[in-house]
Length: 282
Ligand code: SF4
Ligand code: SF4
Image 1: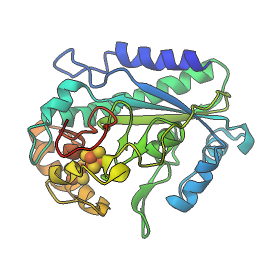
Image 2: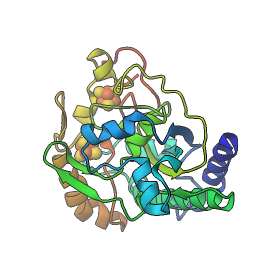
Image 3: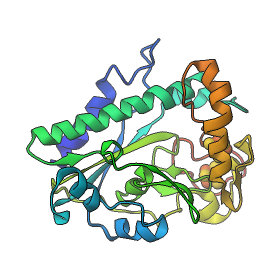
Image 4: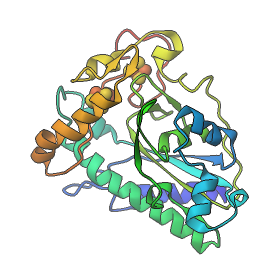
């Protein structure tokens, strides 16, 4: 089952025409990374303390969506869709607004990510399993929390961490073996699949700043000073990405959501786990 799911996700990403820019044959995303988390991994309960009690466990989502008993939730299937090299590079010269390629990837690439969620849920149901995509379950909602700021009832990146796909970073990104420039997704199922092993030394060890106190290059990339050595100011970032950029980049490219991604490109963690110390992009 594990190998079939890995291969089906890979095939869907590499072959789908919807993983293509509207005016070229270039893909939004390269070959995916896939990981599996145990639905009853204690970390999912800990997220209620770390993020907030509004963050749902896989069992709660399965119970609500499928009407099954909590213990029937078995596996969270997680994936990372690395943004293509051409799109990443197109954002290197961006100083204030993202490139057109980046913006279309945020808008239409994320629509493709939704199709991937639907495809996997349907595939598992066809195989006789129960499955639900948290973001499409009707239970996902954004939450403004006094302790952690903007959050939600299900974090794709936190699920990906449990599935051993990477670690968090100074700018609140998620650094995988294919770097930080990606979109991610997950579904929950009652199919039992062995969980992937978490090999990272800590929840932040892929980020050079947290690993050895160096780097910090994402700080300089942010046009609105939303990143500092104290971390990421989510409110400032969101005001820019979902406010000003809708009026500037959104109108320029004809899409509602453009993302920003400046702090995810032209940095050492853009497309890999950075090695060693960094005083400049290596
Ligand atoms: S640019 Fe450097 S400090 Fe910023 S997230 Fe990447 S590795 Fe961490
Ligand atoms: S996404 Fe843009 S606004 Fe937000 S922290 Fe990164 S560079 Fe700054």
